[in-house]
Length: 225
Length: 271
Image (cartoon, rainbow over all chains, first blue to last red):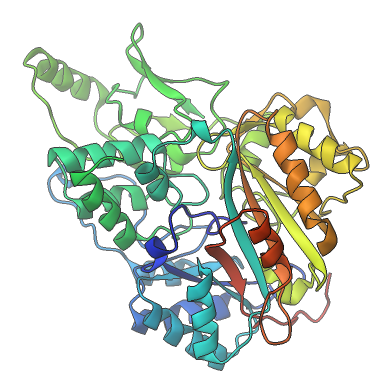
């Protein structure tokens, strides 16, 4: 799963994007991992993650079944972090997204101390992840570099849409929806905060960073690339 | 995936959420329709859209009045108002589309959600990529373009010809009838998926050769490729072996997934 590796953007654009995740390995340590995965996310909460999630159920904002028509006027768009933690029922990677280096550094230190025995990764700028490791006093074990996109890149959408859609590395946020949300924000039909909640619900594992998305939409409102 | 025509009210919300752009409003039947060739069975429509259970005839009538008056109702854009999406019972080989496109569909072959194995993220436990080795993840179709499996075979043929071994636990390797030639079983070649990852491991000295080979073959492939390169750091956590090669090849290394080495084997019986 390389779903967080190929987020589009420059190193500067990742300054508010630190993905820390814990993964059990099949056949190695997945047995009894569910309480550890829950604990990992519990430990993240004091550092105010902008999203948390798991690949089975999604992030802190999820699609809602059986909505009432009134939802078109009054809909609860509050991320439900508690539901994510309570809903973990399979050994799979869980993820916490932070919008600042300090939170990621301090969270990693707590995770090191907790010694859960699960693999922990930071998906971020190379320098950002190194800083987290230095702060926590641990050496990096392995590194997986993103070399970006190649081949028929002319088939890709524009950079703003790409930055939004690649925040769900599984590709569940379509470029058409990203374009529509940019257009709606430009037209004043929705605020960036509202537009972000629509996209976040499509991300199937919770790695979508709503704060970064909001900034992209605010930029796009003034200038379409 | 199918859309129940008795329920669909042609609101058009779903036409925007399909990552492949495979949903459109058919002007004859006036219902949302899925282009089955382009649909990769990712379930983004079914899993991602919220639902209401409104009365379809009533909604159609209201929409008609709005159309006549050139009025625009401005509903939530991520909702199917009549819960019209219904999953198909997928048969082989179409089921391959879902296996590689819906992240919530677990590959029976690996037991892992997603398109590859666990690559670098559990390398501290699996020890799959050791010092002096480089793991490549060559992902086709991401982001948002999709790929026909016949296109990927062009790459696997070339890699196999170069004497590269494919990662055994990778779902795509499981589609090969002959891993020594990189040949994929014929009945899936005309299936389209959202993305698929070919995983290989080589000695660090072959890094440049593999990247050049990928560059050469990608010219014949009608999609985008996302290239990832994983390796082991030294005792101090530094990585001064592969990064210089990549930078010499012109890559500007900005983003990475960093395994911080906290994992350990805890199962009483390993496999």
